[in-house]
View (cartoon, rainbow, N blue to C red):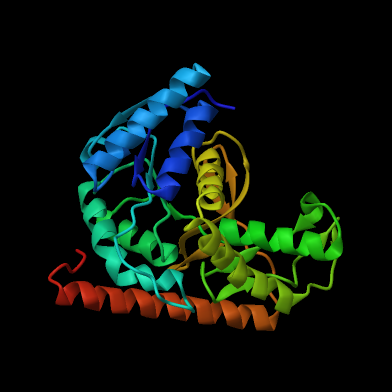
Length: 306
């Protein structure tokens, strides 16, 4: 594994930003964590909390407050702010933050225009927000997490159903991080062998699990933060392997498996049956329509992305 990078920026001091920052403090992957938040008091409090952790662990990682404009030297920037809004949606829950979160993400993208490091987008709806950040900023290495978390939940569900270890499962969830996520059942293998996937159960759990988490602790944090660390580990060349991330592939922003070697990705889409291929088309169309609606909304607000 490579030595620690100079700095990693975390924009957003909420549930995910806090968890990502704490994990980074413990990993020693960077020498410095830069914290930015729309709430200065939140950023200050998080840095103080991280300083306490640094002392307890005798860690070599330092934490400090920084403006996003001062993060251009960072090896990676994690974008995880969330606007203040009440989400009352019962379906397409993640898409409910589209209009509220977009101005924040677009503003950050303008601030970081031309940034040459790696950007990991977490803010939902993550597939649309990753595209928005990339197109507004012009940054080339922009990845959205989401499908990685969905894939982990799928493998857990299948392992429980089949009474096998999770590491025996080779399967992916791709497309949208949302209600139209595509379970790649045809290509799923258990110990290298095809398996009859309980699709209805798997899809139901992908929808129900995040809701159970939200109802119990307010917001998912550990799972998304773990997906961020998996993305950072791969994109920074700290370890090779496959990670499901949202990228622009064939002019479609969607979650797909990427095999990273020394930080460089290669697309490794699983083979899909006809039903899965159609579901992926449907997910693509949904995300395109959401992005078009978003651009129209931003234009009405006088914030048309450039």
